[in-house]
Structures are given as C-alpha cells and as structure tokens.
Image (cartoon, rainbow, N blue to C red; front, side, top):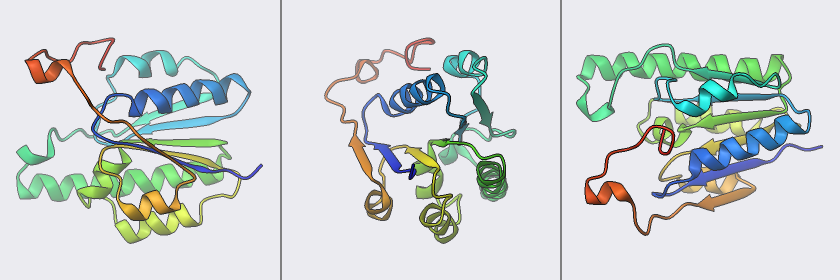
Length: 174
C-alpha cells in the first residue's frame, strides 16, 4: 500500500491530538509507528502512555533549548545543529527499521524557523519510502508542504481558554 502524507496545521487545538489518534489507529491495526517530536522536551502526558504500546516507538530531542525567541544567537545555532541531526536520525530510522508510519510532531515550527535545512527536508518528503505514511504537524504549514500532502487539515481556533488567561493544563493541553 502506498504511504500518503498528512498535514495537520493551523492555530487551533488538535494537531498533535489528530496525529496521536492516527498513531493509535495504525498501531491497533498492527502497523509500526515512529512518533517523534521536534522542539518539545518529551514530558507531555501522552508520550508516557504511548511509549507502552509495543507497535509505537517514541522519540523526542535529547536537548531542549526552550522557547526559540528567548535564545541567544549561539543557542539558536546549537539548536539548529541538534534539529538537523535529529531529523537525520529520524529519517534514517524510518528507512532502515521499516516503520509503517512516521509522525513528525511540530515539524512545521522546525521548518519555519529554518532549524531544518528546508531543501533537504522537502527532498526527503518527496522521496520518502514509498509505503511510509508520513504525518506532519504544526502551525503555519507553508504552501510547498501543503502541495506535497495528500491530506491537509486546518485546525482553526475560534475560542481558547488561554485567551482568557487560563494556563495550559496537564492532561488536557499537554
């Protein structure tokens, strides 16, 4: 079966949640999934449970740099190196370990901030293993990613508690 490309984007809640739902569905049908997060420290509640599933491998970046806009130029360069190395590791694992699905959570942020080499990332997406289902999440998906995707879902915020000063809650937002 040919693997397709999914893009979950927008300013609303639900991008990672949609990718997690797809991960559970794939794992439940016997497919091997590599679920990887960019720019997150790996402490989100869902990863603790997801990591118990035998068909799912979870990865997050070993180094966490904090919010990009708070970083010094030196820290930004270090994060760029870390993100590019991480992407190489993920794509290599996806190819050599024959996963059925690769989820790249917060891919759009890494792409938008040019932490990834955009040309290299696009080239890999265009030439990904034929049977690999690829799931990309994050705000502001650029047109070139949308064009390559078979599914594009826009999660649009109408209303969110954060706008009223309510902080993110463990088990709900993370």
